[in-house]
Length: 145
Image 1 (cartoon, helix red, strand yellow):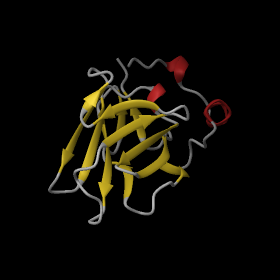
Image 2 (cartoon, helix red, strand yellow):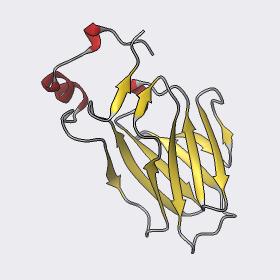
Image 3 (tube, helix red, strand yellow):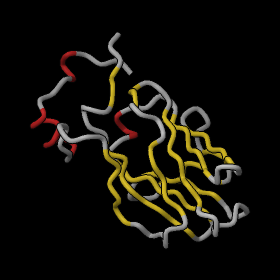
Image 4 (tube, helix red, strand yellow):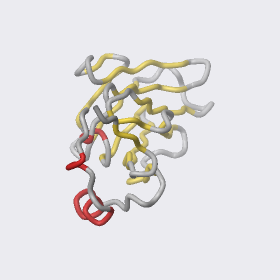
């Protein structure tokens, strides 16, 4: 992703356009916790750099079977990204299960602005966790070419 000086906005412009305060730290805001605590996801790649790959980790508690089906989805309209390691777009998304760490790892290739400030859902069996991946100017980086 190329960034130009024209893309640099004031904090007020960013807040008005994207609905978040760029002066706050990176955060992932829980939109709707549908889980009973069995699964939850977090950003594993910090800082997240636009143009680079990032990982989201969905952690499974000890009571959650590793044999259940795994789903990652994006957005309020639930666009399915990956089911059991099979992706809709293998140039953008991949998923693997680290059984030893009880973690489903979603890799998002070449992070871009369409990947942030939207909800991601991790589902394992019947356990579901959904929250928004919010990025702020303090905790993401943009490569200049």
